[in-house]
Length: 213
Image (cartoon, rainbow, N blue to C red; front, side, top):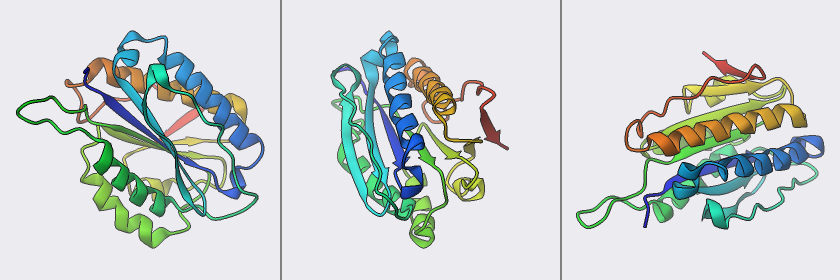
């Protein structure tokens, strides 16, 4: 079996994402997968999982190899909080289950990549801050957090990762551009796995994606 590059997408599905924003996310996910499937390196190694978070946290798609992947349609409740802390807790449990470790008899997975997208701030801030050091102990190749729209707060995301991207709005065009950049990042990871597995360099962002320094 080829070594896997696990990619985890944590997507905000709180009430404020209802309507055009969540529709744009679904379109962006389709373009992300379509782009990755055109890359033989990604086809050979990339496995993707999707976890959504609002008042509840759901693993809507377990870690799945790219050729076998069928995207679910992501929806939102009419209203509700943004439980990002609970999402990180759930992700930590998923990683314990999913990740294949290197042993004397087998090569394990490449360091996983984590992409987080939210249009607000964590409603469960205490849980979020409790989980940050736990997640940082996981050996990620990179964690990229995206704040979408005017209510997103970069300062909370920067507590988790130095790689924070901000989108000015949540329309289809902006989200498609963002997910294309995510695709480029994953493809870079699939090509350089094992070389820069502990600190994957990000490709240059498009003008719609503002990297917070």
